[in-house]
Length: 164
Image 1: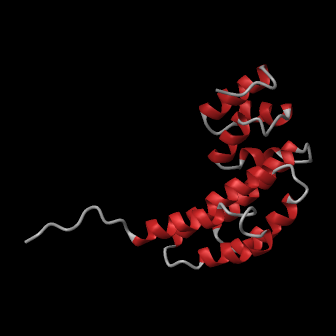
Image 2: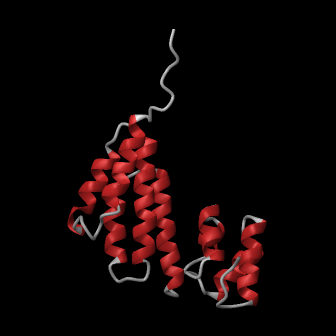
Image 3: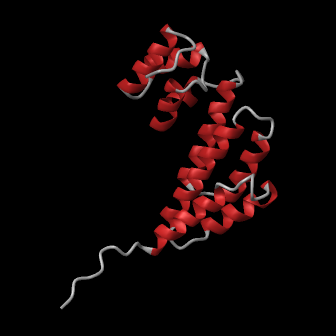
């Protein structure tokens, strides 16, 4: 009896790598007009968690790149349509939109910040994206984790300095 081949990679790993490569080509090698079709195609993959992970990677990269760009709202609407009712992706896109709102000093509510995910609170408290003293003070006082509260407190005490 022989041992099974351990070095074989599951097929979804190869597809994931291929999806990331295709998505990383937007907008340089894949026109933005084709972005929705590409994301929709990936989300039809039989391995839902792998497909959503690849699309989340794309959302993170594109949202960070477009965050303060005037094209962000139309891109976010397009992505929301393609993502549909996938809870994780919908929440992450909504939180990137909230980060944009705060970064552009547009109106937001305390409930939006305190009710946001740990990922959002960590990102908002540590990254230079959010500079709003009101948002940082709220996270310093009511952040969900000690890490968030400490990072936001440091940012409030030393505005303009990255949190370590």
